[in-house]
Amino acid sequence: MIRDLQQQIFELKKERDICILAHSYMSEEICEVADFTGDSYALSVKAKTVPQSTVIMCGVRFMAETVKMFSPGKKVILANPAAGCPMAEQFGKEEILRIKKENPDIAVVAYVNTTAELKTVADVCVTSSSAVKICRVMPEKNILFIPDINLGTYVKSQVPEKNFKLLSGGCPVHAKAGREEAIKAKAAHPDALFLVHPECRAEVVELADFVGSTSGIMDFAEKSEAKEFIIGTENAIVQHLQFKCRNKKFYPLSKDFVCRDMKITTLPDVLNCVLGRGGEEIVLEEGLRKKAVKCIERMIELGG
Image 1: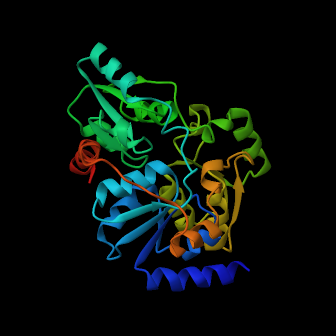
Image 2 (image 1 turned 60 degrees about the vertical axis):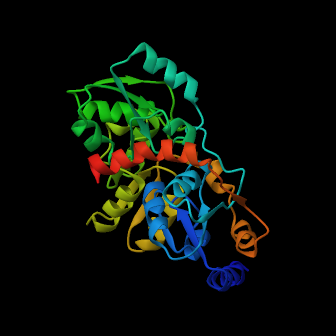
């Protein structure tokens, strides 16, 4: 049974000096065995401070890479080696270098949902919650925002004083719903507030009552006096909020808002990792790690 596997994991991670991190898009049973849950950046920062020598990331590859960037002395394991991120892998380093060469006065702003290699050519990294603030305060006027056109469009609307160049990349999950589906959901639940992640299409974002990161959406829903919510992000958040707020109702914007890469990680995968017979250790060449972490350090400098 699920609770039997969970109990094994609790015992083994304590015995073997292991910290388990779970992204918010993981299933509830995985989040329950994690030491910390949250978005990818928050988990990476947390990994720096934990005393354990081994960290298991229940998420996707770029998240495990980011943990390794922050904690080079720790052993970092990706719970399921097949868990990638289509958005993070949409553009290559050479393509961005070519655009920079053609636009020498442009600064590259990389969403944290990018590979370590792509971060090496970025001037600053951002999260969905810090992107607006950082783009607003950075001194550069011209910005190439990669890779998500939807998040980039949202930031552009909030920072009209800057010039943005956007590429046609993005999250294939959040792009699945358009204006028509959003209107249909709002009509089906007229008393519900509409909470949306900025990775959604602009035509969906403009209909939202609240736009924010995964953590921001959860925090808003938990603190709000409203009793019903339509959730415009990965459907795991609907499940987590149902557990956290038993007196409230949560509806998915779309039944298709399911990330296959996130769902590929299972509780038995986590058990195999703590047993030492599963997952993949993340190894970053030190030169690459140092180059990649620079844009994250600048993000901390500009945005905290």
